[in-house]
Structure formats: C-alpha cells, structure tokens
Length: 436
Image (cartoon, rainbow, N blue to C red; front, side, top):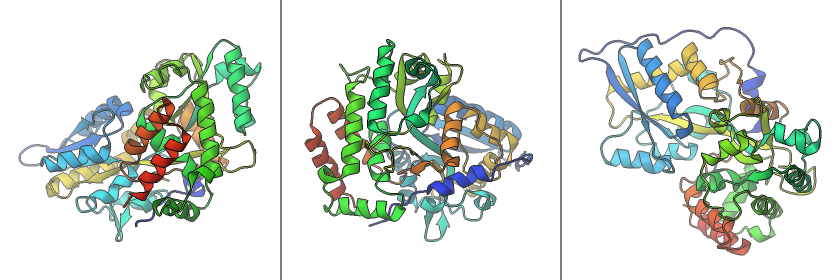
C-alpha cells in the first residue's frame, strides 16, 4: 500500500519567509513558430471558480508566445478531475496539460511527462514536489497552495461581539458555540454549511485525519490502521470531537430545513452580503465573495475546533497545502506540444504576467520561492498569517481519488439526517477497508 504524503507546516511557511523584494524576470516572450502555424495545446481546468481568469491568462500567454495557441477546457461542475481526465484519455483526446488533484498524479504516472529537468524545480518550495515524485521523476507541477476553515465576515462578527473581533479568541468548540449565539442575537444567521460532497469529504472530514498529530508519520499510521480495520472511530477523540463540531454547525445551519439544497454559488453571496457570519470553505472562494463584498474586504479564517481543550492540536490550526497539480501528457501529445506545455509552466513561474495571474488574478498562493508578489486578497492574507505563526495543519491532499465522492455521499446522508453517527462511522470504516 502506498504511503500518503503530506506537506509540513514548516515547509509551507518557508515560501513566505523567503519572499521579499526584487523584480520578477521576464521570460518566455515567444516560442518558435511551427511551419503549419502555432502549436495547439489544451489545458483542462478543474478549478471552476477561476475559469474566467484561466481564459484571460491563456489570451495573454498566446499574445506573448505567438508560436503557441493555448486553449482552456473547463471541467464539468462536480466531476472529479480523475474521472474527467480518464475519460478524455479513453476517447483519445487527452489534454496536453491536465489540472488534477494531488492524489491523481501517480494514477497517471504512465501518461505524465517527467518534468525533473525543468528550471522551476529548483525554485519550488521545499517539500512541495514530494507527492508528485515517482521513481525519481517529478510528474506534477505544484499549481496552488490553498487553505481552508471557517470563513468569517468581520463586519458581522464585530457587531456580534460589540467591538473588534479577534479570531484568536476562538480556541474551543464552546468558544465557537458562544460566537454563533452572539451572531444570531444580532438577527443574522450564524453560519452556512454547504452540502457539496467535495467540500464535506475533501476538506471537512480530512480534518479528522490531519488533526491526529503534527507528525506526518503518525497520520500515515492512523490511515493504515483504518485500511487494516484496526481503528475504531467511535473511540477516536479527534474524530468524535470534529463531528461534535459538525453537529454544532449543522444545528445552526441557515439551510437546516433543507440542508442538501445549497449550492457553492450560494455561499459567496451569503457571507459577502453579511447574511451569515461564517461559511466553511477555502481561499479559492474569494473571487466570488469579492463580487458581493459589503464588508470592505474584511474577511479571514477561523479553525474548526475539535475539542474543548484550547491546547489540543487542531483547535488553533487551519489545513493548508498544495491542492492542485498540473501534469503534461506524453502519450497523446507531440514533442512540439510537450515543449509548448513546458513553456507555459515556466512562463507561470518566471514571467511577470504569469505571476500576476497566479497571485493577483486567480488569488493563488504560489508554491515557488522566487515569486515575491504578496497575495492581496484577505483570505490568502489570512492563510499567510497562519503560516507565519506556524499554525497550519497538514492538508490531506493525497487521499484516494474517490474519497470525496464516496465519503462525500456519506457525509451528505449524515448532514440530512438519513444516517446517524454510528452509520456514518460504519460507512467511513467500510470505505477505508476497501482502499487498495
């Protein structure tokens, strides 16, 4: 069985400790023109929230590289990257570049081009390439560092606490419960719990794994125990504590009467317009929140507490890690297309326009030490603050590809009351016993 690999807090913090001053170099302004016209390449985008930005940056790249014609292909909402890329390979129409989840990289190891010789490898944040390595080859480009937790609208929370809300004041479940009551006392709904399977099982549930220990090896051991049927989640304090917090959020959910009716698009509007104080989501949501912002950009993250002991690991940390990687096809793409794809990856890291796209347009925290642009959106800034305080948890970015779809369905059943906690535990443990 393959060991799950995760990024450490110290590793992620390094990107920002090393960021400082100095201009970005301009490279990749042009590429050799093919005799038959520009080399056509495609990029499958599985981050739907930045589709407009991806389309825009493709135009800029094409203008600066007239020998290349990059086209962005959007993935269908709700479809896992693994399923989409697999289907495109099966149809003989594989993307030149595929944006996949970290756990998918090695699934395509026979189809992914070795990127070990690329210039950006030396500038990648230490540890950010570990999960993309196989037999000494680097198969994936670290596209984005992201984090998540309870997004808060500070304007709403300031009113609730009667002053300047301090996010560090929430250290336990009891603290969170008291805050929810204070928000409700102002006439505003306290929180929204979105029902998307990927949110529930790619982000919320994995906190039960990452909060087990600061040590990656201990987390690996815990997951191996689940696979071997040796872990009883009903007796695991971290899992039980996290689900108690989930129960708290479920009970106060603005969509409690119809908890599965919500959509992703509902969240940015509700938190942006101050209709709810809290929303469990990640920094990728800022472009949408920004469109509804009534709090003058005053937002941040609260950790999801797992106990009522303020000193317990997980109560003051948020998960953060490389959440998307780009792989280059070597099976169905020509050598010219492969070269053009590698040109685009290098352009993202070293070209001013590429860096601007990552940091300022797509609101992505880059995984490269040479990029000195600082994120300006409030959610990315909040994550950087947690990183600099060494208050981030290991993000479970290499879980099995079907984890969020299979256990997302289980979490949805629990959210809607179709199964109880014992039923949820049974489904989670049964899933892990069948993981190969």
